[in-house]
Length: 199
Image (cartoon, rainbow, N blue to C red; front, side, top):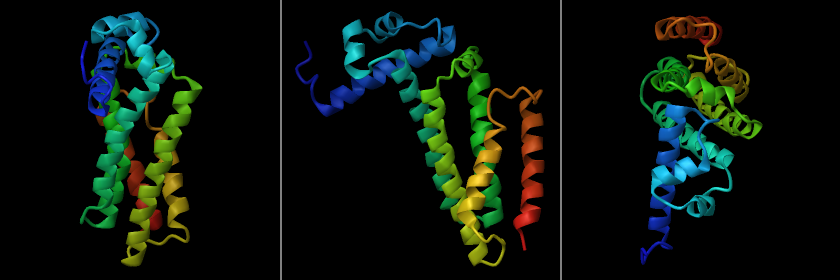
């Protein structure tokens, strides 16, 4: 028995071990074929221990969704707070999310299965990150307006529209034959959008 199992640090560590095990199995075997039993065995814990941290496989998938999107969000916040010209930061902020998700999906053989199994709870969770993406884009547009480079009556509304528009370029990528094709199209879209907001 681990003496400090109930301490916050060890709880987080065990939770992280379970999530790592779950992600390894899901990306290899797919969401539907992965069971709580499988996750427990891979994590080296009892099935009951998994249920202490997560009530269901859906809850595990939500936690994995959060981990991925929190990392993306942190990167977007860094881009937003950078010193590059606003038009460059806007482009980078728009492209970063879709290209990172593209790389993630194509890095693992069963990512498409995970996307196909997307539950309403996961879609709702993703919408929160898209909303935050829109807020960051709105900040950049507002800064560009203050510098006299952008024209926008409502920067936050414009940011939300851009975030939602670019979300259509995220998985499952049925319309794009390659990463280069997606990146080229996304840059072309940004060029058109910038034409509309640049003074």
